[in-house]
Image (tube, rainbow, N blue to C red):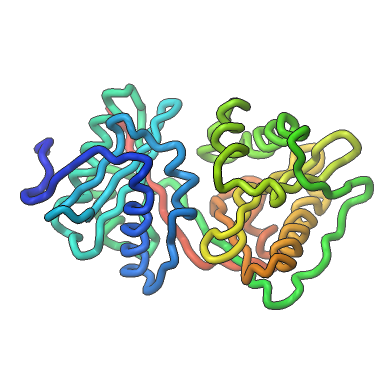
Length: 304
C-alpha cells in the first residue's frame, strides 16, 4: 500500500491536546452505528494518557477538518491501536491507511503483534480488520446498573472492613491491583512510579472514590472508581486478591460503590469487562444487578 493518505486528505501527528477532537470522532461513529452516544473526553482519557505522541498517533484532515484518527500504545511487544473514521468518510480508504501506518510503525519498534478494536455493531469495521488479516480474539462488555432504586446494602465477610483510600495506602493499593489483575488477558503491569503519575496524580482523579476491603493490615480487595464517565459513575478497576476470593467480597465492594454513587446523585454506575474473564466477573456483575449495554470486539494481527 502507498504510504501517502487518500487524495485530498492531510495527515499530521496527533498530540495530547487532540483528545477532544478524537472523542468527538468516536462519538460520531458510535452515534452512527448505535443510534446514540454521549462519548466524551473522560471516556477516552484512560487510553489517551498512554498513547504515543512521538510519531505513533495521527489525525487525518480534509479541508482543515478532522475526519479520522489513530492513537497507538506501544509497550512490551504488542501494539494497541484505536482507530476511528467519521461515518461521512466510511469506505474512502482512511481506515485502511491508518491501520497500515500503525502496523508499519509497530514493526519499526519491534512489536510482534498489533491489536485493534471496533464497536460490535460496526460491520464495516469488522470487514476492514478481517480484510487486513486480523482475527477476532476477544469481546468486551460495558455493563451498567441504574440507581433509581436502592441496589441493596453491602454484606461484608467476617473480619473484612471497608475503607477509603488514603495516600499512606498508595503502595499497598497499587500492589493489590497488580495481584488481582495479574491473570487478566492483556493486563499490563505498571511500575509504582508510572502508576502514581498516570493514575494517582492524574488531574481527573478523585481518590475519595477509591475503596478498599481490609482484613486487618492486609488489603483484600480494591475498587478504583471515577465520576462523570459515560454520564454517571464508573468503576475503572475492581479486584479481589486470590486468598480472599469466593467469599462474597467482590459483591460487597460493588454494593459499597453503588451506595456511594447513589449518595452522590449519580444516575447509574458502569464498568467494562472482558467477556471471557477467568474469574467469572461477568456473572458477579449480573448478580449485583448490572446488565450489558454495549459490546466491543478486539482483533489481533501478528507482525512478521
